[in-house]
Amino acid sequence: MLTLLSKLHFLINIIIRIYNLLPIPVYHNLERIKAYRRIFFLINFEAVKGDYLEFGVFEGTSLISAYYANKSTGKVDKLVMLNKPNKRRFIGFDSFEEGFKYFKEEDKHDNWIEGHLSSNLKLVKKRVSRVSRDDFILVKGFIENTLEDIKKNNDTIEGYKIEKVAVMLIDMDLKSPAEKALRFCHDKLQNGSIIIIDNYFNFNCDPNKGEFAAISNFIDYSKIKLIDFGNYGVTGKIFIVSKTT
Image 1: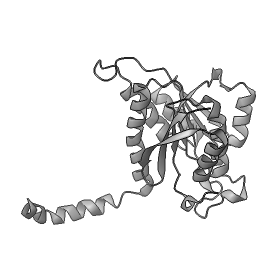
Image 2 (image 1 turned 30 degrees about the vertical axis):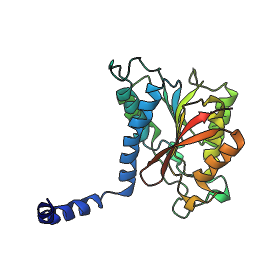
Image 3 (image 1 turned 135 degrees about the horizontal axis):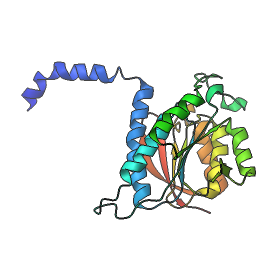
Image 4 (image 1 turned 90 degrees about the horizontal axis):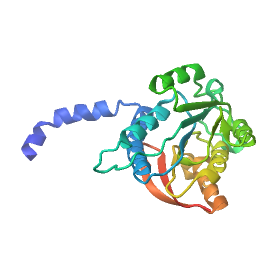
């Protein structure tokens, strides 16, 4: 066996080189897609009610990934999944054309500039509508503004009321908007809800910056208990809510 492997060194070297040509964002997103299958299997198996909320949509890839992960792991097979899972909507929040924006000085990072990571709402809507015409809702605007308006409207968007959150993704890089998203979802979380933090390890895990600080502050504020459900990609972290107050 060792002799065979030694003869394959050239091929192994090629595979290593090709793998390392894969852009880090692509690698990270592929790992997130893989993580979504176990996330939604657990949510469906445990019959956790509620919607999928995504804060930071960009071009819609993770939103669509969540939809298909939910669909594929929720099929009744009479072996593992005996009951049909709860119906859920997939709701995405993003500034779209306006891209990245700093609302607080403490959020600034050398590799993120204002206007970066902008996308086209019309194209994203077209993309998700090809997957499903009824299951997606997109909310345009900075969440510093939109979430407050939704709260005033009794947590209702386009006639749909968000009552519970089964899974939420925080992918906004910064502490300030991440905190607002977490506080918005606080009373909608339940035992078994899953919180995905896409940029947990950025800012060198500074306890006062980034999504790392946001989730830490949220735990202190809400007295909620979170269980580590693993990592994905470069900076992704997953938590399960085990106790709500």
